[in-house]
Image (cartoon, rainbow, N blue to C red; front, side):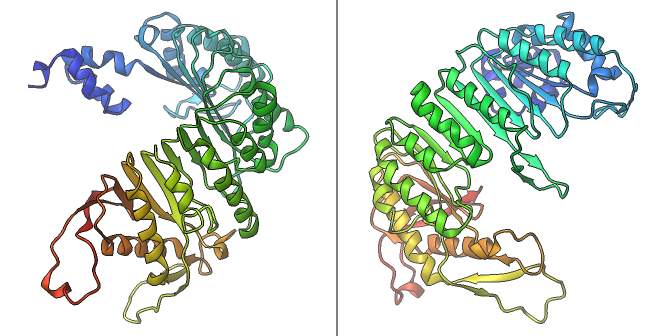
Length: 465
């Protein structure tokens, strides 16, 4: 039955599947193999050290160098995963022992030949993990990237400090992602303290942003050091980005946003000033600047990490009302009062942390105002409402002193959505607490007739997620 469909239609179906699914379908039969071939070989993932020295890795790299795979013809996206150590060890994929000494010239040649077999790339993702890449490896990868004539999207995921001075890609790159983070000995992600040795890396990221004609920028890292990117874009290149995703939410960022109009998609990743007072100051600047992009902004995501004026409330509903082109909106709400939930003595299990309960009377007006504001936006298709963390949990890890604040507020948000009534129709679906809701007509039940319910429309759950 499936094979009765045309190759074009099978490819359309394949576009909705994962890369692993493509591989499974290729193994099913010859017909599906041919249909999925272009999609499967459109993505190539290369793990460098220690796989360059393993038997499994060597076979893949040699097959690529010999142009014996479909990747030479179809590869459009390359993911370079610099995982592992530059020394003897065990292959991350096969468990094979890696020789202690492998000629670096051999490894460099193997990597260079493999990379040269995929000249039609449009997107490259380079993951630099918690190790220092060998100099020859960095030189080889940078040289390859610099020679790509059609490179459109470059993603740098740096989880250690890297030398990016050799990376001088063609100025045609349209989309740049630069994420700088580290993993502490306890396994938590964060941003390292900046040393004199690490400053050049942030300067090189700024250079890459300025030298290319970007329309899309995803920037994550330490705000103080990476804020220079916004200043450079404003004064050195006058780049006017259309899509921005960033956690570098600083006064320099707001100055950049205020320097032009035309942003279409804007995502603030956990905007936070370090404490409530600083966060509120940053939020006030943001809401003052955002109307400059009201005529073009179609997607806005800005849920706060911790409770602040970045969350939705009466202080910014007038700004949201101006964004008449919005199709997608994601915001947090703050709780008013919360209190510890009384523990039930009959429970047989131990809970970690402090269960909390939000005051429903504080949440209801905010959620109702957000839903009413959403109904006034003619193009809005989806609204996602989340809870912001309480300031008292800042710096707290798991343990008996941590309050279960977000869960309590999320439950209150869900109750507010369920009790909301309106006479104003809205096509936008609402997501909260892993549930999806749609506005529909309802008939007042007899047992509710004495209640204070207004409006003929209410939100009904239509599924999970």
